[in-house]
Length: 201
Image (cartoon, rainbow, N blue to C red; front, side, top):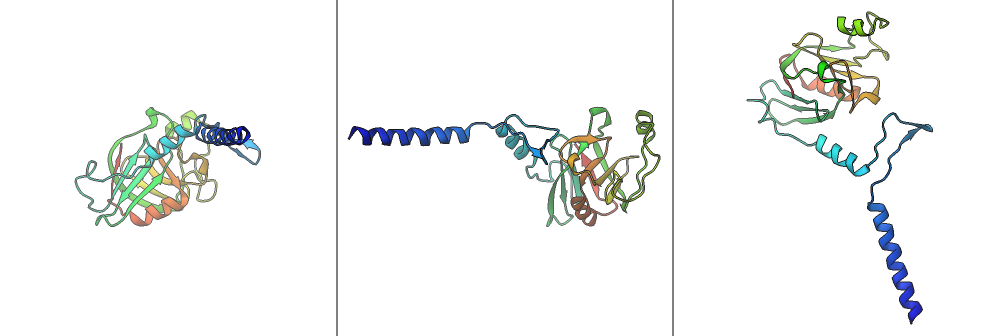
């Protein structure tokens, strides 16, 4: 009888210990082809909380007076781009890359002034000053930092564009523009018009 009690209590202890181990924060070091990635998260629960808060759905009303011609909200802090169609039947939420520093970040109201498929990239004068070895121009293709599509904003040099370097998405990695996965910018490109209102917060 005592052996039976012991086995029962041992089984309970094992199950309780296993559950506690599964619930505890894990060291999340990912690797790609045997090499560690550039960013590692030390607390898996922190990562999940941050991702959930970053990619929450939003209502357009606190940010726009209407959705005439559609509305794009770029939330730089959460690294997310929101889109609402004029009739509010379409809502999209995309992860994005954002500027590297506060000095490169611009916030405020603007609009889409041009839509370009296969954009040509030219570094700004300040980019060339910081990086004189950069080429003066890169045409469409896999080496183009603007990816497959670009929405030109009314602010000089500012774009919402794609990227061929998918590692940049979800990070502070740009020189001022907002980057999306190529498949996402292609979708947003079709949804927006010249004149679509844009707010960066």
